[in-house]
Amino acid sequence: MSKRDVCIFLAGLLSGGAAAGGLLATFVLLVPIELATSKSTFKPSVNSTSDPQRPPFALDGCCPVTVVDNSQWKLGRLEYSEQREKQRFLFAGASEQQRFRQNPDRYIPAFFGNDIVLASDSHTTTAGKREHGVILKDRIYLFATEDSLQRFARNPARYIARNKEAPIQNAAKVVGDSTK
Image 1 (tube, one colour):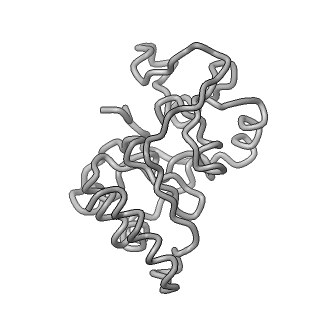
Image 2 (spheres, one colour):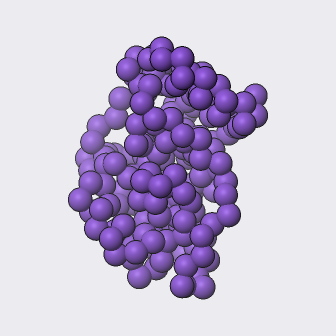
Image 3 (cartoon, helix red, strand yellow):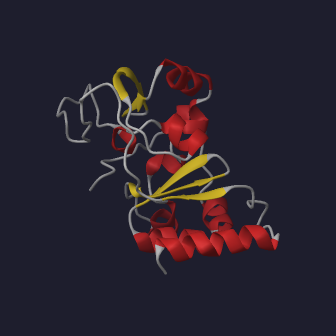
């Protein structure tokens, strides 16, 4: 099943009206798209620093607020950055950074950015990748592989119910390098 098939499957599920575990709401497939340009010429890279005080960029340096609110991968800018849960988030501008500060749980990837399918099925903690990301009920879910994404798409309620997470501010687990 390709990403296009997953998108068609999800659209059919949404139009069918059968809510699986009450999770119907919005399920938008985020496929890699060309990044919007910013005034900064900086190209974020998760490996741009080896300093443990400056952890890797979450979401490959894309702004989590534009992802959740606009379903758009847009590079953040260094002057608008925030560190949370051993991740550095970059924001497209001051207003996006302020929205993040008001409700970080909404914008930080679910399950700390780890692949919840692999956690549930294989009992392993594996960082998800941006290219295998989806939004479900205004939360970003990242998957390590296309297969994990497809398994999640077939039954999201199963994986979310089996992996209820503590509030992100009190989390013990953190996201690893999301591009490997």
